Length: 149
Image (spheres, rainbow, N blue to C red):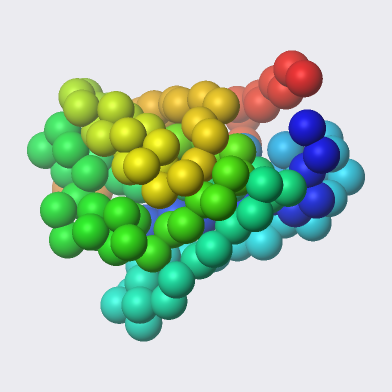
């Protein structure tokens, strides 16, 4: 696998998903000694643009879990604006320390349908959006990312 660039692409209303995708993206970019490009997919203007990738790109795609699924307002933009063209991807979902239910499977299927080659998927418990008493401080830099080629 010849990776020329790593992307961290994320919808993150609270900053949790941005942090999780960013930590993974940073570790991968450092491992391969390639640039990391962060693509926020948060505002309507950011989501209006198409993002085509190539087969030498590695994309970390992150989304939060709302009621066990990907956010219904964001999913159509993920389906139409993220164009894989053979890029390898990691699907990352975050959840407020309850359950991620079907959100990871949804994101993996969306990536496959968009021409990505998913290499992995992960779900991370994070501080809940409604209270600081559930999973405070998560995600954090205390976790380690191990990369096995």
